[in-house]
Length: 140
Image (cartoon, rainbow, N blue to C red; front, side, top):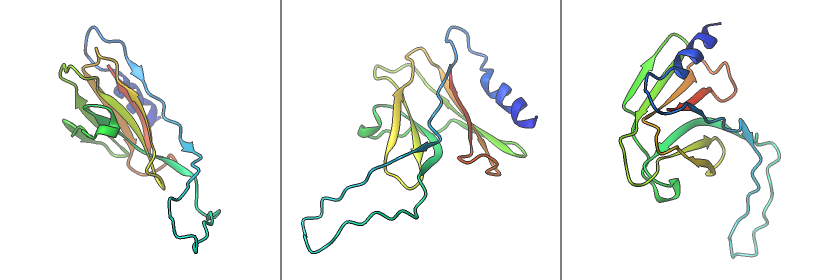
């Protein structure tokens, strides 16, 4: 019940003009790895005991994530079992981007944030009661 209240609170962003956009990152992704090792004396072996890449957090960027520009949050508020991270998005000529960040991986899944969004909020579990800890990510 407490998570539902926190989720509802995180979805309410008192900003007029922009419709709320909820980004729903895949919780787990299947990654196929390869190596560019040129030394043919080594054999590439997949470790089947490693868990799949699971959602760790969400990051906001000032440009496409491949170009860097990880945006520092403006505010982090902690509650008993969760925290809400807020990024304010001042108008910019380049679109802001969000990226799903995964454990066991260097892969990000990224999408542009709508140009009329003025802020984004990430709500995360502090006690890892959800597999990834991410509860919601909303931009408005």
